[in-house]
Length: 557
Ligand code: FAD
Ligand code: SIN
Image (cartoon, rainbow, N blue to C red; front, side):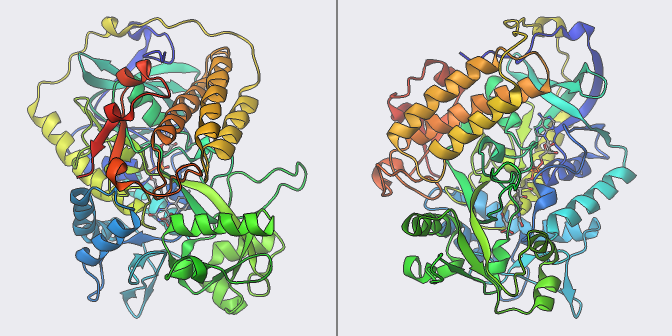
């Protein structure tokens, strides 16, 4: 049974800050929402690390949008739908690709500088895109440039950014969201952010897995707290595994390095080839688009080659390009490889798949609305259905802006037209079971959870492995409950709760589709499974892992 709140607290004794818009997270989605909302009311960003920390900063490849005359939203829509393996929400994709170009132009007006040649934006190609349509910054530093530009705008504004403020739980009353309970890490105290509307923009959950490209703050907190508050979560079984993370090992411990450094798909877009350990190119045997096949296909093919050659990585060969060309086009990748003793112009780069992107999340409509009044979600934390079972490369930063704008437009209507919320805060006080004061160190429990998820809920799943994973996650959850109060324990509880839901969703989907692969159900089953799994707390509290899946599914729109 999942408790409604992670901690017991008495709102009447906590410092309160009142805003029109409370935004959880400061990646592209959160910053974008804040910039859209400013001028229409007071705005707070609550973010658990430094303001620029999140997946956004590490984005390399770029942002996809139909910007050149040869391209069109219709072509972008088709590529997105094809990559999504039959589960994309067509209406949402249409919104993404139609509104995308204007959001990219708006981002440029907000100060982001993308690479240009002769006064024209340079467009890159990535997997499953039929055309060059990806704008990028400083070669492979798109995310850093996006964060820089948006944070500079925020700094000029009256948006309050609360850094190192861990969002613990959403506060709800009478089926409405009335704000966020935060914990100030430097001050060691709770702060209650009361909001007329609350927007979850807290990113994905790549850190549930031992091997991931996601930074340590990306732990699925937003989805877990939304679920506790009664929000619906959708498509959790679809975790995208990027095919080419740098296969580096920590010299001192022998462990795999975490997070993994990404070798952008744009490298393959510039002609790099994948070779197995015998030096043989293999992708043409798996898909007509070879190295530029959809991401799920490339990851699956790499896994097969690794099994065949009994190795933990394959090779990405960029040696057809000169040292100067690689250094110019991919400066960060070049530098990082060199730091690892690899000269990418002279030798292929060892790569292997890593958990990268969470397609599922808080279920929203086209305007970021959730099933809870006054609660919105956008960015990687949300599930609009645009990515289906496998996201098309470089559609994520775009999604953060397109659906961030829409969420704020809808939230503004709520702020402008509705009665302000007047919660009776004393009524929120819900004592939970007191936590223990001992147990395994949280770092160890986190590693155990990540290892279970990587090994048993990772690239290749089966009924047996998933059932066992649920049991192990339950044991970790029980241990977590014994940890002393604080952000580490809360974060781990979020991770364990969400991990369990991911494993349950993967168990329910008895087919292979997109990023979800089952060794015991290797084919897609369109008759039974062109559907979404939608989870709510009410269902989960009663859900047995062998439950009849039909109670949980919704048709694809
Ligand atoms: P994030 O940028 O992850 O931000 C989440 C924010 O929420 C952070 O500020 C975090 O601190 C905060 N937060 C989380 N939990 C809490 C809490 N409990 N309390 C308070 N704050 C909290 N996509 C593309 O489109 N193009 C690319 O080229 C690309 N490259 C990528 C490369 C890498 C290495 C990675 C990891 C991802 C890449 N992606 C790319 C995916 C893309 O970067 C992300 O999907 C996107 O940036 C997510 O933005 P976001 O704002 O939703 O979340
Ligand atoms: C990459 O550069 O390969 C990442 C692109 C993405 O995740 O969209």
